[in-house]
Length: 152
Length: 144
Image 1 (cartoon, each protein chain N blue to C red):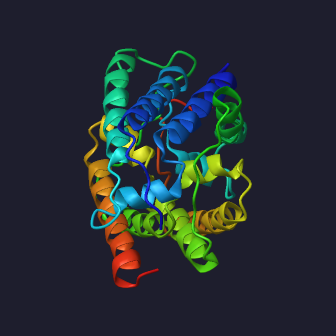
Image 2: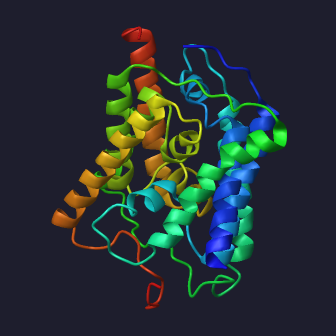
């Protein structure tokens, strides 16, 4: 059941990325190009995605645990530190350079463009490097299951 | 660079779909719909045994294009740079940055903001700023 629901949710996510235009790097770069070919469409996507999620989460968090799971797995970190800001800065530069963030890059894999594969190979390399660095220097998990529930 | 059409309605519908997906995932599995988290933890070193859930998440994303083309009969709009150096640099930065910053557009930009997380607000403001600055530099200063 968990697997089926995860599939439905991520399929819906992918469809949302395509319908909104987020899966098109040209549209993403134009959204970011406020001084040039500015296309503000994706501002609507961000706003409505956040509003929908906020309303839905408000209902969901009235429950003590998810319908199929043991607990809500929410990030426990709350410090705005250098690691967060450096990571977000680098992420933004990469996002601006190409117009892909991780979701759209995976969705676009199905379009079988060589450029997507090159981007993904580099992205996975970057992720791997960061994970190794993190485990070497920051020996703690990024997210922890809420009140002492075992991660299943 | 090519101009793209202003599509407020489609972009609103897409945003609502993304939001519904995030809510579904939290309601049923208790997880944040953070794509970089799902993808990066498919790579070693492994710290848990959720590999099958993560593979399923990727499979759902991969199924989106075929389903969209099947239902609508139209191709997915997709234009991306052909400059290999840009693709490699962009990929490395997106991958390294999203893991180091504990999230990307989905985890921080959608789920985090929806939870009113100050960390996610700081991350989102930061990556929006550097992304806009990068596009400005590349397009209007370097003229690529």
